[in-house]
Length: 144
Length: 432
Image 1 (tube, chains in turn yellow, orange):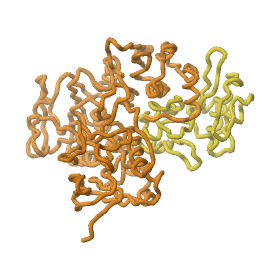
Image 2 (cartoon, rainbow over the protein chains, first blue to last red):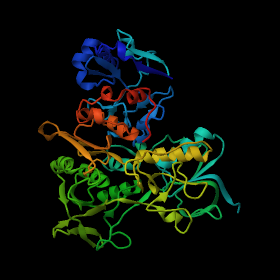
Image 3 (cartoon, rainbow over the protein chains, first blue to last red):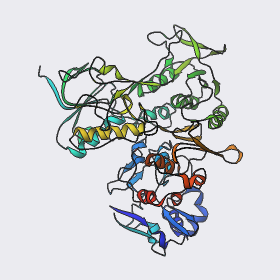
Image 4 (cartoon, each protein chain N blue to C red):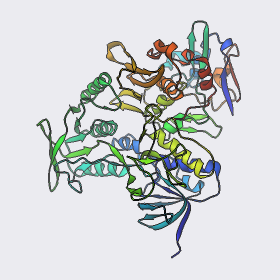
């Protein structure tokens, strides 16, 4: 399956990936409305880490033997037909076992704090929004 | 009558059994599987019973897998029948539905709730006294609540199950009294400080908390429980009692066999017992704790899935290992998120402990280091990216150079040693 890879050496920590992740998962799909009016209802699933001159973007690694799937008590965390690990928020009960076991720290509480939220690889698009909108090709989407 | 025979026989129908079916089918799509379980339900999630009782979720959300799971995986189920004993010599299991011969066997029957010797709790619990580990318990409590006015309930045990029972009853508008023998709640998972935060939430929610004491006598009349006496001398009138002091592995199944049994069934890293062809997984089995090196039961959900899958793969002729197990629990205590991993609350001369409380005591983080490696972690209030630390424990990464970052809320992958970071980013996953 295709996955997202970060190229540390090209990341400028501009955080456009974070913004476009939110926009993509917003109702309006428009930058200004999403960031101004819907921000409180959304959390981004990609996070830019910065330390000194180094930076890179982290999102769910869609692990091979995903620990979050094993840990999920509610059957919410599951692999979709395409191979991505997806959280079904209709089933999630917010036990946070997934947060406890994710080695990448890539699962967060949703904006409501009730269910888990994570990268869905923008299931309905050919290329995830964070990759598509990275101005420096610091995020790439490829087989691996 | 034709003799019942199963090439592959699974006893039990919870997380480990589901994992075993999926693991087996990764390797072998053909050999039929037979599954015997005492409960009449399709595989469901035990931890969800508190959410069911609280009416947060409906019955349809209880199931771990879609309803066609057994059919699509070629599993013949015999539900509502109990396995009584394993006879390894004749390679058969005696069940309430008759004997079944097996080729390979997986024992994944979990545990039983512990009922302590308390005056008034004899053989057969008085009406209004419940345990809280299975769907039937939630159904029985629900019926009890509907059948009479229940104003006050006592929950004996301030561990994970006790807290979840208290939350559910409180959601049903019942005044709950929680009784914990240790000096604080969640004594296995939390330290004093984090337990103090939890106790505050518990009391704020209107639950009264009695620590350092236990129920000494249960009073009941023919209609049911009427109250309990605590060792502290206090009497609490109540219309129901939930006993939630722990679970013990259901090892009676292998009694009088040569299958080696400690407190739980002993298995190797392939989840095979001391008798070839017989496997065990989940709460009924014990394994080597990665951190302490001791053989013990680690009755947690993710380990049951992983062990079950391992057993299934090996039973089908594949090769999988289940090692690197250690205790971990994520418990929301009346809205306070807590994550406890490994030796989370340990102290000792050989341990280095890093602690940090957030502003206004709203969050707390504790990291325990031994020989340069993290062996325990505790998060309360703020649990963001707790799994990064779990990963460090599991992979036994030397953290001497990044200690300061470990107790920082901003801990991220960028702080980690680059080799390990690469491993995580590549998505190899971690066994848990």
